[in-house]
Image 1 (spheres, helix red, strand yellow):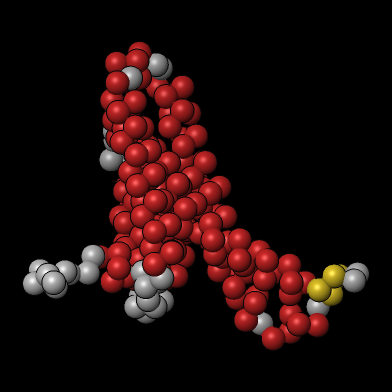
Image 2 (cartoon, helix red, strand yellow):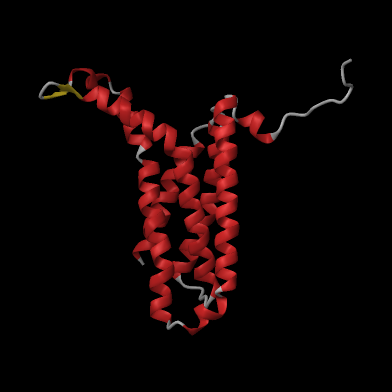
Length: 191
């Protein structure tokens, strides 16, 4: 007997066509949500302790989260030059001693493709902690904080376009936003 209940496809089934990849993304999103929840709870529970820390020590503490996320984002962003290198026809003849460079670049591309989304979500989690800690105590409307807010907004759009990228429906916006995000977070980190 067939059911008359009409099933509607979910957001992820519409955006990620590969079922194996969709399951992995669901796991990554669940882990990210758990980490954000646990980290936010820990920050909230230690709020009184943070008030007792002097301002320079506190700034150094939350800046560490920004530094860690920057390192992870550079790894995530490295997928673009590796894939551009793979498109280059001249790579076929490049060798280093007896080793073909194309094989190494292909292996790096596979690893980066596999870890692109989990590392991006991990870095985003670290950014969320950085933002919470930055605005929690003694927030000022200065250049650094304004560029941080702009960078966070671009990151939100970047993640959304990342999901659209699975079906190539982003119109290269994921790449454009990634470059914009990188420039903004470097400006934010430098001042």
